[in-house]
Length: 437
Ligand code: XLS
Ligand code: NI
Ligand code: NI
Image (tube, rainbow, N blue to C red; front, side):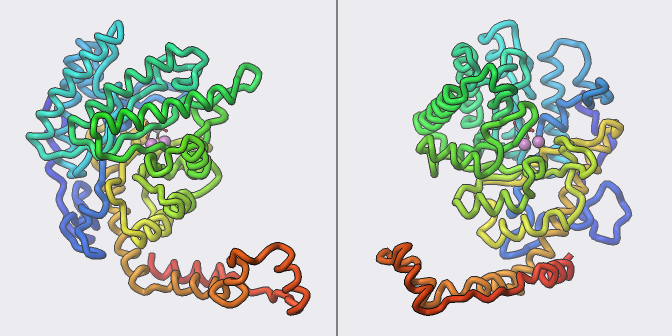
């Protein structure tokens, strides 16, 4: 049913004084800010899985959404309908990009060949839709975690047949991503971790995961895919101990595999908080290691300890994350993917629009604040000053290759070094940030 969103107009910018719930108040795609249009900065993407595939279930209850493509009819027909409605949604909400998992767009068949056929059928139609609408694919990814074959892991499964199955799935999905002009390819570790050490050979699992990453990178070069390969860190859920816990754990792994520069990170807000960090920490860590690839944007709930994947709604949660991104050259080939879902009580078609409009507006509002923060240069000035002694004689001496632990020891004694404490000025800085919000 192509007309599921028929009562919804194309969403336009109407400005702060508009009361129209189906209009942008802050996101003006053509507005220039920090030298580029908002559209070019954000590279927003709608995700296929939460927006069109998730039926509204939670651990205690089943489907709440009744979408026309979620019925019991022929699964291929349903997938075709879903595709049509998804592209109708994309062109109305006007995120220039979208993202999908292979299993979001097409159903599994009774064997691998049939599954592949289903997938390719929808990819054919999708290629046509992309041409027709001008939509772009931010990234593709394979779902190697939902089916029961993956219950003990995908590339970290004790059974090499599961590894091979995932490898086949990823090959097909990389081919499709290349064909659709996808700008990145994402690997989220899903079940790449373990539940209990009692049945787990951790060293073998990590070796196999490393092998998988090598195969992916080799294949990327073989087919001439120019996009970035990204790992998406997440600390737990579904497994207890995930090998891709946070940016630091992923980077350690990427380095162990010798794939530095080949694989970057796709960082998600709610995953950051679940790992005990925040979004800006994970982003700044990636930037400091030249590994920022793309972002999944959402938020958790402070009172619920799991990945609620809600739409962002507070500039204070985003300002420092955006500050790091946009004072470091922006998102490059990455984008902001709304890996976010509406609440299961939000059952109407308009609810999907309200959520995305709110998310895009909150990002736009934050970017306006960030532009001023960057222009005023207060934070870098403060930080530069705080570390300025490293440009002095002692700072240089410590980094001189001729210095040693004992020569530094001697200097402390000879010069009677006795460090004075200095305020970190946290509250002072927090007050400055509040001025911009
Ligand atoms: C799940 C992940 C997932 C990835 C893509 O928690 O965020 O949605 O972004 O597999
Ligand atoms: Ni998530
Ligand atoms: Ni995600």
